Structure formats: C-alpha cells, structure tokens
Image (cartoon, rainbow, N blue to C red; front, side, top):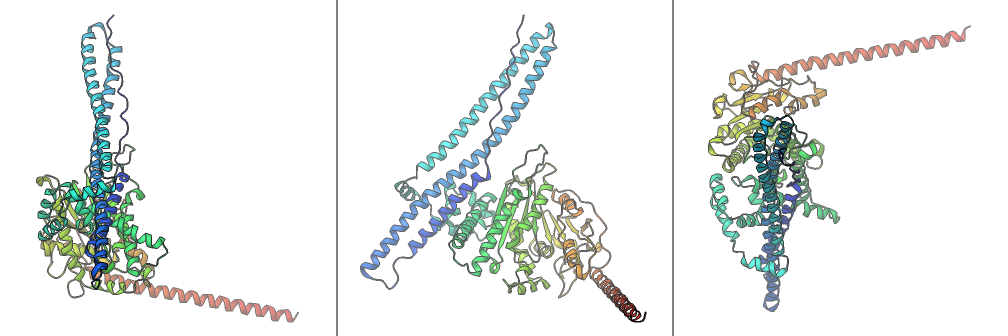
Length: 622
C-alpha cells in the first residue's frame, strides 16, 4: 500500500498591528523635547539682568548656562529616542503589511492542502505518482511559508531590541549629556537654509529629503511650528511637527485651567482652536471607520494635520486636516470652506471631508480628502456674539473679494506644496481636485485665475461668484479643458448672489453661458424669511450622504465624469428677485390669513359673550 504524505495545515499567523497609539508615544516624546529645547534656548539667551555686574552677574550667568546644559542633555536624549520610535513605528507598519501577505499565503496553502486531500480520497492507483509529486511540491510551499513566518517574528524582535537599546543608551543624565556633546546638528544653520529657499516647495522638498533622519528630527523638535506649516515638506513630517505643537498647546493651556488660573481671551481662543484641531483628528473614530472591501474589518485611516496655526488671522486660526495621505493617494481633494468658518469649527469641515473620503475609496483606489481652513474667511459665530463682538466686523468683509483674493494666493501655495511632496511617479501624480464651497469657491476661483492653481479639476459649489470682473467664463480660470465643474441647489440663496460689479463676487458659475460642466444637485426645501434655517441647510448640504451632489463630486474626485445638466438660464440675481417678490406675497397672505382669523376669533368671542348675557337676562325673568 502506497502512503502519500500530505502536509498539515499551517497555523494562524499571530496578529501584529501598528496603531495610532504607538505613534502618539513618539508625539509625546517629541513634544517634551520641544519644551526642553525652548527652555534651553531661553536659558542660553537670558543670563544675568543687564544692570547686574561683578560676582552676582557671573554667578547668574553660570547658573543659567548650567541649567541650559542640563536641558540640552535631556533634549538630546528625547531627540534620540524620538528618532528611534519613528523608525520603530515605520518598521512595524512594514512588518504588519508583511504579516497580512503571509496570512494570505497561509489561506491559499491550506486551501490547496484541503483540495489535495479531496483528490486523494477520490483517486485510483493510476493517480498515485501524480499525487505524490503534488504533495511534495505542496510541502515545499509549506516549508517556505513557515520559514518566512519565523523570519517575520525575528524581524519584530530585532525592531523591539533596537528600540529598547535606543532608550537604554540615553537613560542616565551622563548619557544624555554625552548625546548632546556628540550632536553636531547645527539647527540655526538648517533654519537659515530653509529661509534662504524662499518658500519654493520643490526646492524645499529636495532639501528636506537630503537631510539625515537626525537633522529632520532635530528641526521637528526645535521648530515644529515652522516645519509643520512649510509647503513642500512631506505630509508625514508636517503631521509629526504639527501634532507636536498641538500637544504642547493643549498641555500648557489645560495645565493652567487645571491649576485654577484664568485664561486671557487670547489664550481661551487658542485653547478652543487646539481642541477643535484635536477633534478633527478624531473624526474617523467618532464617525466610524470605513470598510472599503466590505470584509467586515474596519480599515485604518491615515489622518494628517497639515496646517496648525491657532493664532493666525488675529486668532481665527488656520488649520488643515487630511483623511488619507496626499503624498501617496491615487486621488486627492482639497475642500475650501466659506463664510462663518475658522479654526474653531474645523471638525465640522472635517466631517464633510471624511464623508467624501469614504465615498472616494469605494472604487478600490486610495484617496486623501483635505479640509483646508488655511485662509481668513469672513467669520462670525452668532452663538458667541457677546464673547467675540469684534468678529462682527470680520463678517462684514463678505461683501467684497479682498479675503478671497488673499486666500487664493495661500491656496495656490498649499497646492504647490502638495505637488512637491507627491511621492508617486511623476507620470502618475495624484489626481488633484480643488472644491470651493460658498465664499471658498470665490477663493478657489482666484487661486485658479490669479495664480495658476496646479489642480487637475476645479469644482465650485454653492458659489456667490466665480472671482471678479476678469472672469467671464470657465476658460478664464486656466484649468485643463473641460475640468471646471459647478453645482448649486435651486433653493441655495447664496448661489443667487453671483454678479459683476463692486457688490458682486463674479459670475454665477452654474449659468449655462459660463461654460462650466454643471452637475445636478438636490434642490433643497423651499424656505421663507421666518424659516431661514431651511435656507441655510440648503447651502450646507452638498456633502450630505446619499445626496446627488456628493455622488457627483465623488465622480469628479475619482477622475470620472459626473452626471451633467444644462446649467441655469435664469440670471442668479433674478432668482433672488423672484424669491423676494414671492416672499412679499407669502408674507402679505400670511398676514391677511392671520388678520382674518383674528377677526373670526373676535367675532366668535363677542357672539359667545352676547349669548351668555342674553341667558343671564332671561334667567331674571322667568
């Protein structure tokens, strides 16, 4: 009797994940190192007071120098371990991908084992030689797979040993000082070189990539506000730096609150915007992770803080958060919000961007959707009117294009930075769409017309105007042929404002004669002056799940053509005028109806009173 030896099933490959919590450890280390760096620089720059002389002055200078030296050692230690943590997390991410491939191979091999056993059960003597060869081939596959799984865990252990060694190398004050003495990084020179590049994102990206890992880490620690907000620096490094600044602000300001100190108005604004930025980073967790391949396993979302300047624009704040990595994504979208928005409500803008992200990855391609609050939009929150009364003056700027023009330059620079840090082959750069909503559409149009916006498509939604007297048609926006899109709800009152002139912000881009590709949008509910909330909802619903607008915007972001309609043939201002006329009729009829009802009520009340008196009088005369 011939025995065919069939290999046994390969055991399951243990789980291995690199989580966001692991990366947060590095952020905390980097934030602590930044604090130490700030202390060291301050100590070095501030010795004895200017009017101190003699021994007291020398003693004070010596004390300052000694403390600065101590903090230098601590900073160097934290810098070393931050670099090591970064490398460890990167390594574990790579090994996690390896583990998933091995798990896939295991499933395939085990299925082949089951299939071979089934064939053996149904075989005859003539099949033995062939089946024996198949079993031997399959055993070779199993052996190689087991060897690769063993190597995976050897690599994991090696990564852990390297990380532990990095911590142990600087876990005493002496070792920290030694690390500081060996650190030859000239941060001032690197900072000066970055300044010399003059904001050229391509040159900045090349320069950054030529730095050593230690030099990049040193800059992220010493100057996180600069590195995190410099266009051309890669997304991951900007995120590292900005999260460092964010954690610093949250820790410092919350510590004051916890200690019972009263924050100044400026500090309270800063804390509000820091909390909002943190909330935007947590949107995927709060809204639910996607399951693009519908296998029941939630997909991780790479969230990146690309801009974090909570004190910008007089305290309104600048912030941009990306769901997905624009440096590697197949498709990238930059969403530019409009009026009433600033750094305090970036989480709301983030929810719209994240909704688009989940739709954009449904076709199996990777995507990055960015909520970009990187300009000074006219903003005023009526709920906080008494807290920040000066914001009412800011909101008044909505009647002109000044902030849209300034914002257009900032938007164009930001997009140039995304292009410079794109890691895909030049022949297949990420398909990049800029989406301007409300006043943000005017801003995006100025970026296109005034600064040659480097985007593959421009989409204007709920637009009050496409950018001034010099833009008369879609062709004036300088985008690729046929790649200007526009959409507006019929009952979106903001889209009725498009007009030329001093009080206008340019033509309505959904007009048929403007020449944009106009896509259909759900019309929204009719509204009246006493139900203006419905009108506002019509203006803010373009990213609502299951809406026509979201579906068409998703097609554009994916590089496909949306459904198209013919565009408006009625002038935008005429639509506003018609609404106003109809509203007058509505309000008059409403008032008449109300007056008639009041008269009826008065008559009925009087009739009842008279009848009651008649009854009373009758009772007196039996």
